[in-house]
Image (cartoon, rainbow, N blue to C red; front, side, top):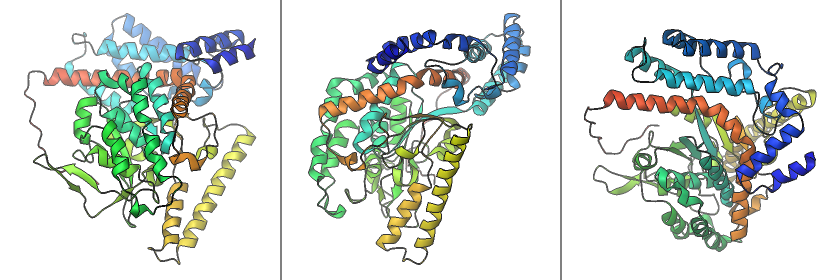
Length: 492
């Protein structure tokens, strides 16, 4: 019976079908009882139960100062270890009901205190609390790895999250992930459904005709024209700056790029660090696989709205070579502390685990061995590079190797293809319509098991962010909005 239900889950064509089968599996295998039973060594159930009951008492008694004091004691996503991945690996759908109840109670308490005429709490106290709570709790981000034409897996991940209204407002992408992030981040929320329609997907299929021109690879990078790549970028990505795109979509999209020259630093382009940079050129730079496409010079709009070169002496290539998943930069810019990763980089997939585990002898030995192998590889790379000329081909190759090996390729929640051994040679392979649809479908199915975990773990941060924005609107309501000054701006 259990195997029959698992087959239903594997053959599900919608999230609702998968969810129904997953719940049936949990009921059949006694996991619903596990969810209802609070006690386990996996988390501090007593502390969570105690805080839950305190909030319920204060909220029902309309004791808003008591509720505010309780919430001020700390709101975070891992109270008592309730965010640990092991709590989401036992059942097919969801986790301990106590965790769900606690998250919903915190959310209800926040909503209650945010009301305009809540008694016993001044406007100043309210604004101060919500700003601190939002900052302390943090935000979630979706990060899409370098992927080449495996990028259609990312499209499936986006589709699954969008359908459940779970798309984070902070999104990053490198290489193929940058392309998908740009398509998403240059459209208004009400227009997002168009990028998942068959008509749009068929337009995306034009990629195969472009990529086929470079297979087999017989041209040098400097001889490859940018025209063909520009053709698909122009079709799918409006000619907007990062700032203009943010005003349209409300999404903070971030694109990683790598310097083509030595002694330069990688960059993360977005509406904060590079508001006037044009997204099309940023995408082309991030998708510029060395040896296939020539390095790209960025472009921006000047104070007159004219297109001009941006950092004209610098050229840029594939963002995944230096910052596939820019976690530190996203943390600094947006206060992100929860990372959802769509990982399709075929070079690193075999070495990335979907879940972080810290228990068990086998797991400990495996993790220690991988870390030792990585450290030895980095040490060998640095040792071999020292006597070489910095401009030599071998030195540049070793620089790329060191950059790739030293990166982190997993987050808090990792969504990956079922086949962990993707052929790197197919990164720039032409795709048939069937292959494209299969990759999108695989991205959706790979996301479904994480949907409820994402919903639970991001529920409070999403509520906090909406409340803070609503409070900001109330504060500035009636005041004229200052005019923005245009012009080139950059933050290194």
